Length: 220
Image (cartoon, rainbow, N blue to C red; front, side, top):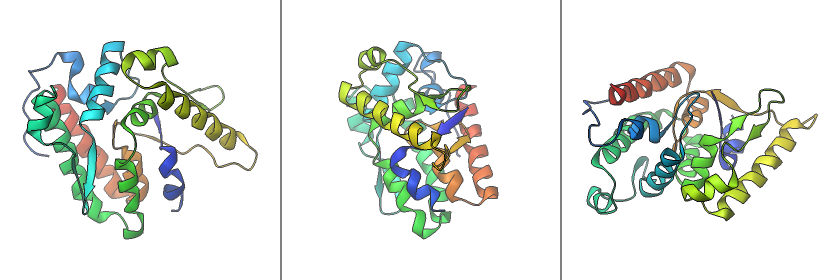
């Protein structure tokens, strides 16, 4: 699957694991490696999309210094009804990414902050959007009604669709910037495409491999 680099960071980009417990506390279809990761060819049902929206709002990462961390404490997340396995998964993802942030050129590290500051609803919509194989343009992965039922605001959906249309118009123009896509499994809230573009090929390949192994451990 080709993941779209979020609009807010595309311009900047173009200028250029530990032991895991089996996630027994949630149903198989709600596995964190499914709900919190954009997977190739995924077909989420309404319940999964709704849970993705809810968790992305609660498990929002922030930048503290040069590292990524969860904005809320484990206690606050538990009080909000977040199963421990989701917090554990996200913390492991952040630990992985934090090892690679120092390897990103200094002038590009601001991209990580911009990525972390992206709205949770927008990140979910970005992960769900799909490329039309016939014309190479992007389309929303869910309808407005489905988005509203999943907990995405009408304003967030309408704004995203408008920006998606503007991007497609730019990409389709004779002298427009081509769609920037990278085929990679990715955390919903922290697109690996940003790291892939900013890191040397050998390091980006290593990061992708480590993230894939992390997810496999949760899926076993």
